[in-house]
Length: 387
Image (cartoon, rainbow, N blue to C red; front, side, top):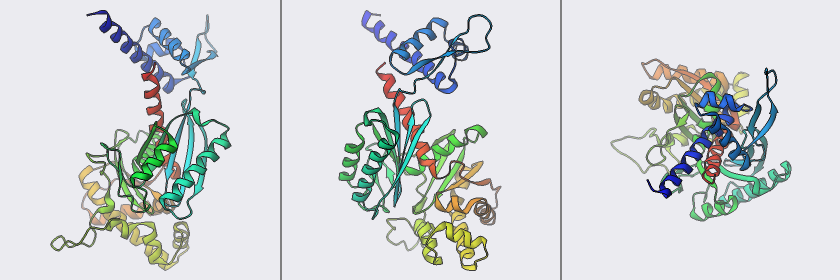
């Protein structure tokens, strides 16, 4: 092996060891070098060298001595809170939410802004104002953001990164909008399907109870699903996995009509469809009225549960998940009672064992939480390539 190849191999090994040590500190810090070595199997000199390299890069720092040790107390190491920030973004049809998380995993703050019309132009304006507001609120510079990840309605093509089928946000999937977003958030920016990020956020929220496999269904202004395996949502070959909004509903397969651009299931089961048919203007108001005995509200909620069960039935039969999680405005406001109604209706639709149906553990911040998780991984990957 020539000297150049040896140098490349040594550099790769150094980076690999550095990443192993960094991941261990992220998962277990504050921690000591002997503890890192025991968990990773790396030698004491290798761990020490990696920690000093990571410290020199500004990724980890010393956090004093470990208390309660006999003899010479070892140093504690932790992720340096000054290493950088991740920006998370959740784009809805009327609101945008932004959040900041430090690279050591600690949250910094959130900010919300309203879009006046829901058009692409107004949404871009809301994002610009929200970004300025969040940075000012937290007293941080734009340059401190290492990576930004946005959850958006629509389908993101995994090959081209192009956004499609964002029918609830006129002009949002135009090329000019995507250009403006990249100009606003810089080169280290990723846009992802919102329901996938919600699934990541849900997996993180349920990490303590070991729920890594589930189907997540979001019903709000839009309708979408994610199949989660080992904590990761499956996107499919074209990013279309979970696009159940297009599930045919009331369509004669022998006499097909032109497919709805929004999706026939979404047109029937979305929150605005439920509200328009019941005369209520707010999902929370409708659910509250149903619980208080309002017949029209109760009937609308019962019909919605039936539609949600219909939407879930093919996923249940194909995936056979151990858990179904409901989110979005309908799932969150509906709560355990709505989840139980959906489970009951699934039992009437299908002659199979029905899994548990629960309301989201991550709540309305699931997309932000998922974007933070994804952004943190991307940020560390990028930073480590320069080590």
